[in-house]
Length: 84
Image 1: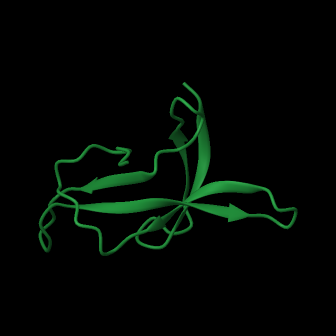
Image 2: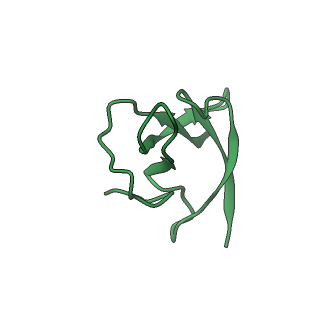
Image 3: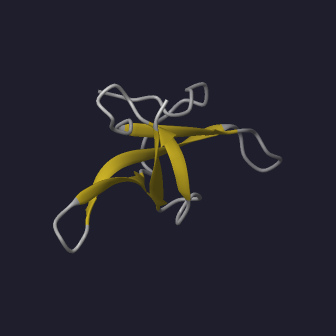
């Protein structure tokens, strides 16, 4: 399967570039969910990142993920699940 190095903006993954598997139309999923296990201080939760376009100086774009702190996501959701 093909993947694309995709930048994450905001939240705990800010500044990270991770390889994300591409879908049928060679695009990254619209929503990327990262389950976070329970720690001593916090219960299990899910970080939600939404796909956004980033343009370069020549007008070309690439996808990146932006953190969505207000998203209500349950902790049982798999990583990289796309929502339509």
